[in-house]
Structures are given as C-alpha cells and as structure tokens.
Image (cartoon, rainbow, N blue to C red; front, side):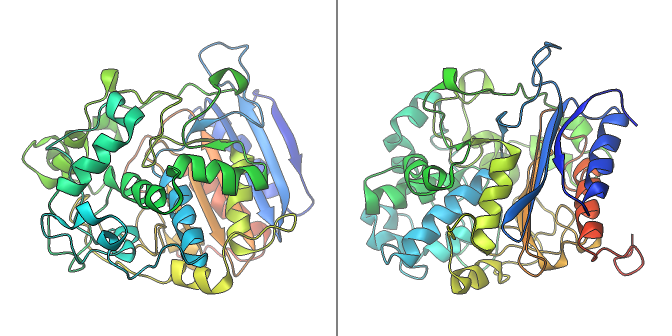
Length: 395
C-alpha cells in the first residue's frame, strides 16, 4: 500500500489497525508517525514509520517524542487527581484555600473541579502574557493567574482553558507537594510506568525528538465549523485567551521548559500505556481508582464553548463524547480522551478495555473536526474489538 517501510508489531486480530496506519502514509498526509494500542492492559499494536525530521535518514523510532499539544492537559489532570486520591487536594474545596492569593478578583469560590471542567472563567493572561523567561521561573505565571479575573461567572458556563489550565494545576500541585506538575509527573507517574513522556525534557541530548511541521492557520479552518475571525480579532475572548496570552520568543517553547498546557513531549507507546493505566492495571500499576475514573468520565460541561465557539463536552480534564473532535460516530461513545490541533490523539475506553496513543509530526489539515488519519486508526481499533458498525454509528 505504501513504499514507506512500516516497523513494529501487531497481534492477531488487530491487522485492521496496521492497514489503516499504512493507508495514512499511502495518502501522502503523513511524514512520521507512531501508533500504539493496549488491550486488557497489554500492548497489541506498536507501529512506527516515516521520518522524524526533514533529514530522510532521521527515521521515526518507537521512542520518538512528538509535541503533545492539548493532550498535555491529560497528564496534569491525572497528577491532580492522584493528589485528590491521596487527600492532598479536594475537587470541591476553593482553590484559594491552598493558594490564598488566588482569591483576588472574584475567584474566591473557584474549585479544582471548575478548573478541570473548564468552568472557572480564568482563561486569559493577556494582562501578563507568558514568556519563555516566565515559564522558566514559574512564579510570574502563578502571580499573573492570581491577579486574573474570571471572564464569566464561575461555574455558569464553560470555555476552553487553553493556556491557563496547566499552569493553574501546576501551582496547586506545587502548593501541596513542593514540586511543579512536570516534576511531580516525572516522579510519580512517568517513572513508575517507565514512560517516554515529559512535561519539560530534563536532558534533550538523551531523547529523540521529532520536528513538528505546523499547518497554516487558514488551512486548519478550511471546511470546519469554526469562526476564523474570532481567532484573529484581538478584542475577542478567543484571541485574548489563546494568542493574546502568549509572548514566546519566536513562538517556540523551549524543550527543557515546563509548559503544562501544551508543551509535553511523548511517544505513542507511552501515551497508550499511560491511558491504559487509567482504566486498569499495567504491569501491576493502576493510576486511578474506579470511583475516580467514574467521576473523570462523567460529563461536567456540555454544549457551547465560550472560547472556541464550538460544541464541546468535557469530563474532568478529558473530552467525552459527543463533539466534532471526539465523535461517537468513530466509535468513541464509551471513551474519553483528548485530541491535539497537531493531529495527535489519545483515548481510553473502559467498556472495551482499550487504550490508544497516536503521535505524528505532519500537523493537522483541520481544526474543530476529527482528522482523517486518527479517524482511520480509531475505527480500525473498534473494528478489531468487534464494536464498530458503520450502520450503527452512522458512518
């Protein structure tokens, strides 16, 4: 199907995933990519192909790290929920009880649950945009969040906390553990599970990092039900909470820096392993209890998003069906996960005991809907476990 050699392994019963992976390369839309699937706590698909950079000799490897983008929020969500399970944080206790300065500006009632479900209203840092220097220091961003005002009455609506999400959680983690969320994740999650997954890469020379090829903004919205004007209108909430809240040198996050909202780096096998550990045991490790998982997957925010101006449904920190980037029509009606504007994807499905990690570097041709590449792979996974029925799901 493709002249790009496919590496890795596929267990019996999951050949459909390999065909879909090869189809992505045959379509000419893939540069380098990896996909991994866990079923019942063990890997059944682990594939990689293509190149990690413009250098044709720099081949994608199983441990190649890609830019995780939005699914970085999944990592920090689980870190926070671990602290909830350990009694160091509570979902419905005001954030200000842990972080007194945060109460300023009408934020005294905001809880961790509101943050994780994108309901706090604290979405803008345009009064003190994040710089690389501030990211390195951490404290200036926490101070800017403490000074921020909610953009709507907390818990009355929801809007994507694109920039602020990870930093809000990181400061809470730091207040309770003395560690930023990146360091906590490394010690308590990545280390025990053996993940190639980092919120801030400690030693760039020790890892293999893919070059990300970004699509132009205009192309991302082609054919999508998204109002591009809101993304370029400097007075809009969309712009202020996203582009207006960043002032990075060259628009690039340093590899060693902790960007807990967008900047994690991860390999596809590590993403699948991480997601599998949320729904069951992986080599004796289960990160979240069934009760916490049930709360995570319960819909907390549904309908119109005040930031993206699209329909979005959220549990705690994860997307839940149904909306355009996490559609039930792909078989995801019993799953939870997160999509990336870069095109990468993670999900887990407790009912079918599957977990999925897909990482690539070609960028996405769409935003606001599910890219064909992850859709092919997701549907192939569900066909492999006997769920996906094109008639049933309206495909």
